[in-house]
Image 1 (tube, rainbow, N blue to C red):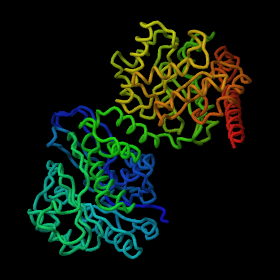
Image 2 (cartoon, one colour; image 1 turned 90 degrees about the horizontal axis):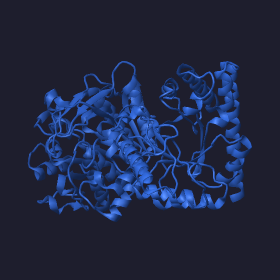
Image 3 (tube, rainbow, N blue to C red; image 1 turned 180 degrees about the vertical axis):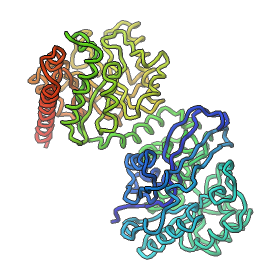
Image 4 (cartoon, helix red, strand yellow; image 1 turned 180 degrees about the horizontal axis):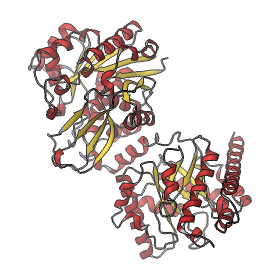
Length: 640
């Protein structure tokens, strides 16, 4: 058994993708930021499919380099081979989508970090830890990076590691096209052909488009080019043919490309071809390394390529293994896959799990997003309220102590400084949207009537909305509240933000063991799929069972439930934790006033100093964490 299935080697960049589809790159007004570079994309795509992937590259010692490293870790890619270059900047790429045939892009790669990759960055033990390595043609274009690639290939061959090449021909990265020709995919060059052919003999697998085999084989006739490659390499050759799928050749090249080994293709709408080849390669690796045979490997590859061409971005478009399996089993229901709601729900749910860590983790959340409760306290002012929330954050960070599984709920209206300071601490961060106490539900004005304010939120913020609702609500109030929740949910997804829905029926009317389950089903029927549920404590196992059954029936990928506190005394919370902890879908608690209520009242009246306030809140928060952890352990022991 090897530690890794595959290591990719070469380019890494930050892709800035224009959001205005159909216009010139000159006219783009806003961009989404993704990681990019063919080897980086392939590693992420492979990891999403369940392969243990690593990457060898260089990034700058700056914000974009740290973004690449952190995003790779979120994607599950091993970064032991990622070197931080203290002198060079991380590469950038600006891209746009004009139409299905035009995709303008500009590479900012002058003396960039990944082009400084050198032989010293290639460690024999790391190469030997993988079953296969994948290199891309671009890094054969420079003497220093070529030396690094050839060293890696030599080490791989000596260690019995499979070797693969993505030809990845970008003429301007070879210096045979200008900066404005980033979109160009083929310009004839004898020098490039000779350089590629000098290395083709060391590969077990070579993958490219017809144009890429033209440059590798030195001919614009595809069969002739493939035969030229076969003349210097015994590798399996996989030729990508766009809408026609792909074919593999293990031996002699036939007269007709259709006589190669092929896999099932998927006719879908083409929206964005950038990065499709990298998604294809990730799917191919899954089949190749799992010894599925070329027809199956090509089917996986074609499907992953189909996902890529139907979505915005490169790495973000690639499927998880669960998504791929669902797609292959169900088939195409509409050719524009990005608008297939069932598919998009699985895509979102199964690729977001890397954002916060282990899906089996419990979360202990200190909720100090309260607004009205503070505003009504004697001595309150907006300035004092904000300062107090900074003390709450200090208490949360003290208890967290750098560990995962801790979080906060904090608003922006009063707690803006604390909210912003929490970014990057490792805390789970929820941020409320509702106007406190509103029924029917209205939202904080900062979101705007179009909810466009979500575009300014940090991507680690979880959108939280509290809805006071009950199954017995009259038709008008139910319709009003559901419309607001659905619109907010859709806006959250559009902005790449996780969504937490809190419902409190007991403040509206009497509840029973079915009340919460009925409400949950009503929201799912609307097409609202919260990443998180925040629910009031239920005192009976039957109520919890009904609630969890309703969630699991509709969304097997939900993050889970956190239990709210409702200003309950600690003993009452302990009793509710004891019941809730017996259910795996309950992931922890989000409690506020039990922790900060008395402290805030004293502090607002200057009866308690800052240090004492932090100490007391940390003590209460820590004690609640212990109570929850003990309840979870007791439940697990009972179940065992």
